[in-house]
Length: 431
Image (cartoon, rainbow, N blue to C red; front, side, top):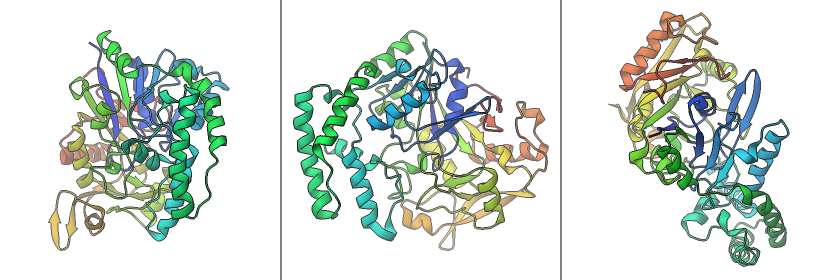
């Protein structure tokens, strides 16, 4: 039997999942996305060349690796085709490596209009969405009015379905939000044109995944965003609209949980967050500036500056629990190089009481004040190191303390953005 490995972000996204997926696909036959949409931003650096992917799985640059998009993903046809064209202009045969579930709900122009109109209406209480229509598309899916990929290949059927859905949403745009309506004919014409290019990529993704396992092939399940943005387990309502936790890999692909063999939790060596929402360890001093500048902390999707802070083990432990994480991958360790001391949040002060688990809901989370321990920093550069013994002793001590506090082993350490700037202590496909 082949092995199925799930990769998820354990924080608020931007942990470095794309690089790790690309790295580990040296032993995989396929990579599958199982949730989210083109609100993800996965950055790969290979031999100094940078590639940013939003929708296509991060194994696309590996020859011979199938890249699949499961039913849990909300698919923006224009964004997908734009990515395909960009890759193929560089000589990457993206379309022939792709397979897309016909059950994917589509993100269409009216979803983006709704997303923008709602954020504008919220004013100072805006969630900070990417404005790409992700939430409205998931709403349509749950309300059973969404249009799925498999429907757009029947011209008569899609014309009728689209009219019905757009009448509904245009009414809201016009009368509720006082926002411009979206043109039906323009959306239909564009969709029919896109259908011709998308149809050859459609396949039974669930069937393919089970066949790969039966054939003894390894598969990587690539998560998007981070577990603390999960619609059920995250800092609600400042969350995304899908299940970003490992459980989403099963529902978003059609592979049952018993066939998910290992979960790798990606952990940035410090913490970042984009947009609104509670963030107990956020820094507003020179240490925060150091992390943001040295870590190049700007969103790959939105370009927004990320909020930066120390590693929060309280939130991290909960994330490791709800994802049944087998091993951690620590990324951006090199960003901590040169700091006199490094702090780790080990508990919160919540209304005068010390708590070691995160409260439910954003309001109480916002009231949490971090309780830190200090660790000695290191002045040596860790950039590009590939062996654990090469690391400065203070860096080893920091990693050992994180393992001790979390009760979970660190299997991989990333020491730079390039694929090869990595220390592998235990390969997920070999464990």
